Image (cartoon, rainbow, N blue to C red):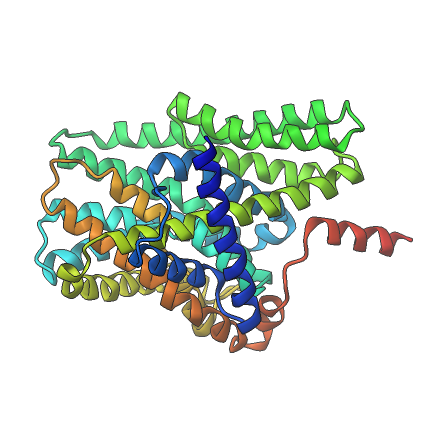
Length: 415
């Protein structure tokens, strides 16, 4: 127990130092964390802590998802919701298909390996996207689109990943059964999240103690996630739904003003800690992997994944070309480069079927693509945001106001 606390404390110290340096030189914080992890792992100074699927999904992901969800305002999301839904459904399918085809014909991978890679790399990673946007203080419409997409498309990618894994194991699944399972999982996860949020708001409303109110939000985040896992539902969708309900309904009922302030501060800090640990461990894991042997195929994969993302974004934005909420070409470029991959893709790669041919190669290539995404793509987001047309730039360059700030503005305006 003492050794575990020491390792955790060491990681926090490194994260704090990296945060100071990143803020000082205006660098992406996530890129600094991965780079620090690579250095620590390369010098063999890393504590014996590894990024496992269990650690990522059960400990680190819930606070990041919940913190982003409670800050998503429905008034902002509803205007971009049609585009977000298209990106998280058709966009994921298009991206996975183009990636699989590219790896099959350009890299010569067997179709099962190409399919699995396409499925696990199709979803943008909420850890990477949310952390990068926060660090660069990009707000408004495009932050809402990128955050909402990264939060919602994990369910779509998980379905594709499970289907691809099932095909690798040579078990056929009828299309009707697949659609039924997907519908049950989505609807069940949403209902579970709503139930947890309403229950938490009800009990929190019976107390005037902000610490008790904060405790109920904590129980909601991890409770919804873990319960969904037990029931065979999507923990990400359940936590996302619970956070959206509490972040919007909780503004008007349930929580006291002191409770709102406590919730805002606590979850912002919890997300910072979770992001810091995840990206440090991502870098450390990369330093431990023999990656030089797959450098050539990984270069192909980076190009294929970026091209697949560009095709998916262009295809999904095309139906909105003549509408009021159209996305400019520069806006599409921001969506392409903002489609970051990270620890989530690596966690899925860790649970690839053992019978998959080229399994080790797929895992190594996944890390390189995720590392490129965090270390290179993240640097392109801020310059692209600054070059948006005037109708988008005003929304994209301003920092997103926290719920507490918005409440203060509303109360000041009423006065």
